[in-house]
Image 1 (cartoon, rainbow, N blue to C red):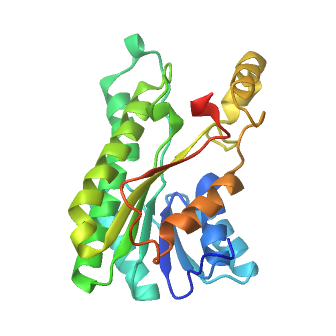
Image 2: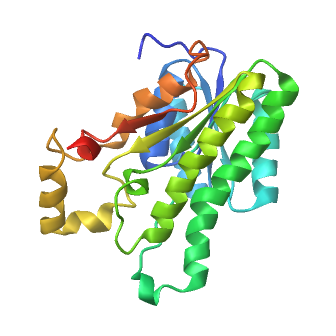
Length: 253
């Protein structure tokens, strides 16, 4: 990561108060960026920003619900008030809404799409407006999941939304190139987070997923940090419309 210098860059990470989001916040801050973490849980926000500041990083935390247009716009305005600009928007906030498809209420399906796809749209839209108006380029990063390309039984809303994130990013890569704004997707594999904690109690499932992963382990949030730094690097002006897969080889085995 010492190859990449994010000094004087400002990075927003939604869902940045824990798990993969917080690990990415540490990584981009270590590379020199100021980082704004957005999350719904104020207590987790406070804990996360204290952790970052205690490590010597320039960070702020803002309460934001990515499913709510006004909340997203307000959080972005407060980020600008704190840092003056945004160079990278990482749309990471997401959660699963598991349930057998034949029993799944429509409202639950819509919640999955709202959090995981609509949230990315709202965050990218406000960031794109700012980057176009300010000039100078920028980076949009959508956090997807290997479930976007592999079957996610009893979690189809999540996987459909994460597939949509990839399509959204590819469209933005084409549309925003004229403004020197790059758009790429980060696709994590099975990663040890609070969201996946319930799955880790099923020995058969854990054995199957690790046997299929060439590195023979699940990922940890810190595994995603270097990719966040890479995708935020302003010197990589020719890299857009791509998907960076960090899954220990799961999807190619």
